[in-house]
Image 1 (cartoon, rainbow, N blue to C red):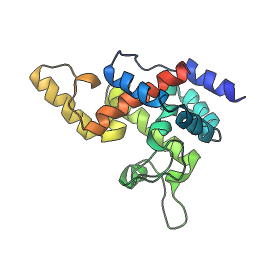
Image 2 (image 1 turned 90 degrees about the vertical axis):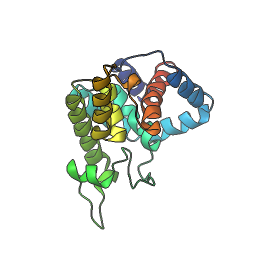
Image 3 (image 1 turned 135 degrees about the horizontal axis):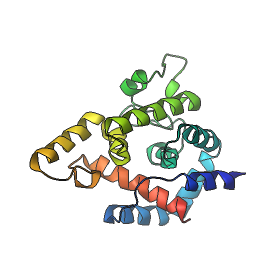
Image 4 (image 1 turned 135 degrees about the vertical axis):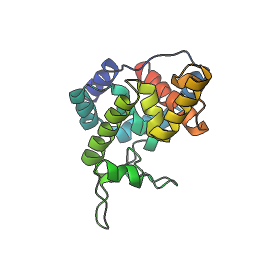
Length: 190
């Protein structure tokens, strides 16, 4: 049943659990509006079993199933001002690069099966690109790998730590990773 899905999700959480004021702030934001998360959970029902199964098959962290919570609130027709579309909010260039077809009749970004495969391919690529650092991979999903790589190099030159929490990234990206980790923490301790 649906409870089984949430259990599978919780059992597969693998991302680090830092103590961060940014995460605490996002947890307050989400727990302050329980109706909102209930609506998102309800909307996720048609998609979550499929997404969880694909993540499990590929041995990826289950937190990735919560990316659509942050990206689109699990609305398949979500469309952003940045021309991102679908549950996973692919922008046209990335969509094309990961094989999502778009024409007048069809937009692969709105096709749950195709878009989920593309998103997980992209995450696997980013995780490898950042030597297994999932938080950098997730930041790059939001900002692009070039932006994150430049921030890493900047810190390397200064002899500063290169983990996510020490990088100077766009404000949206600095909020994105804590938001995902906050959703994970709320799902873990509802």
